[in-house]
Image 1: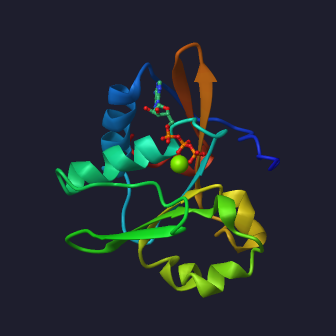
Image 2: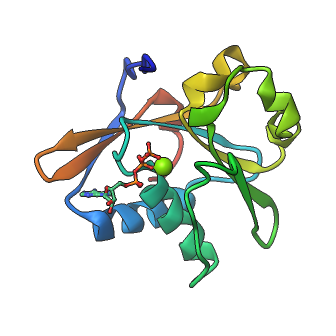
Image 3: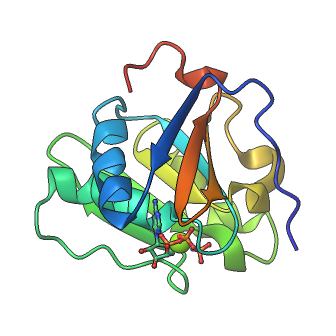
Length: 153
Ligand SMILES: Nc1ncnc2c1ncn2[C@@H]1O[C@H](COP(=O)(O)OP(=O)(O)OP(=O)(O)O)[C@@H](O)[C@H]1O
Ligand SMILES: [Mg+2]
């Protein structure tokens, strides 16, 4: 069981009633991001983190398959102007593995979208944009932290 941080000052709450709305929200969030950004996606198993990332990537690269990087830990995608790194850090055994998977070099250069960011402890860039997904009925509520306040989501 990983203790997940609670976003203390949620600036935005968005409801996604189903998978389609989650994919659409991914696209909308992607439009507010740029190279060098890191997004810390939290939420329990099955919350919809990968779904949101899938919507974000497919908005830029229509039709591309976006598998969960559960076992590969990292999947990279070539966006026109930068690389996107989609990481699922759930299976990381030690925070120091960030060096082995090359993530430390990607921070600040690529757009990095991290599931289970707590697994890398203090290696998570301080300015990372926090995004938490909660279950609400059949759907989900997505909460954005204060780092998003100057972004147009
Ligand atoms: N807004 C939503 N409302 C209802 N169901 C959703 C929503 N978003 C995603 N789902 C569904 O939730 C399930 C799990 O989604 P997903 O794999 O994206 O979760 P995850 O947070 O990445 O899980 P994990 O921690 O295992 O990586 C999928 O069946 C997906 O269709
Ligand atoms: Mg996932």
